[in-house]
Length: 346
Image 1 (tube, rainbow, N blue to C red):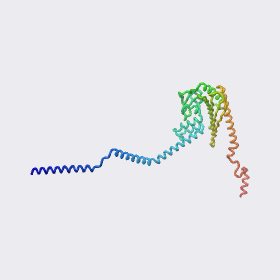
Image 2: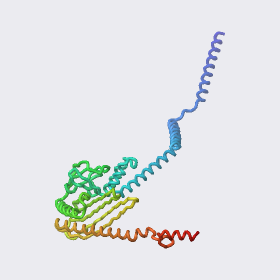
Image 3: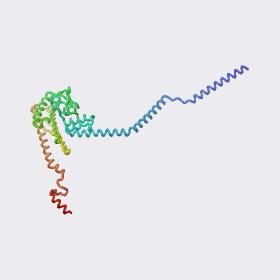
Image 4: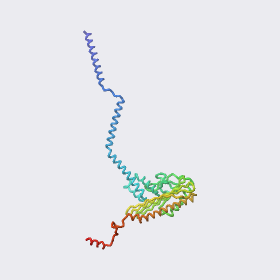
């Protein structure tokens, strides 16, 4: 009997173990399968893409109108600066300084570039540290703040907003001896020409030389009388190549700007371009030939301006106004005639 009881107990224990193992197997089979690493990374990327897309769309919705208003303000600011630049280019130096010094009109961020364009285009001149009048010209521009004085070979720094030279640069002009001789002779001849034909203190000149033999003559003059409400500038540029002797072509351009603003706003902007043949010989003879050609071009242009003024007074201005009323009858200034006409109508 004891053996039978032991056998039954062993059979019960075995059955219990089998049931336990069967339950463990069933629980393991019901677990979710584990994802591979590639599937996990793909899901993460998709979720990040969806979040980034939703974030960007929300940002666009948030800043759409503001972004458009900023773009419009930037465009308007650029247009305003461009209009101011064009207006400044048509003014004379004193008028531009008045505009630039008014902070309510222009901001400082664009004034420097605007004044650089104006000073170079109008060949503004000022007194340099060496005591000479130096022209701010594209032909002598080393950089946007440095300009050459061809007479001394020095380079000076220029403040475009203040309109004055502030110092000297270490850069020096390197010009060949032959071209330097022609340049010096022409500079002397031009100085004599200006002393006879221009008002002292209101004109400056510069003769630039290049190693290829090109000589450039710049003449800049200004005359202002603010009490009479008028200003004016005269700018001349002449170029000739003296690298070889014989016939050469002198090319000249003259630009004149006159502004009259008493009870109105009238400007004269005119320019001409001429070409004249000159003979290139030694330095002294070439300088005299070039000076004579320049005098002829400028004199003929000034005579042409005088003819324009006469024509404007006799024809242009008269065609702009009506001399007779619509009836074609001149006005009768006799008051009795008008009183008689009023009585007849009664």
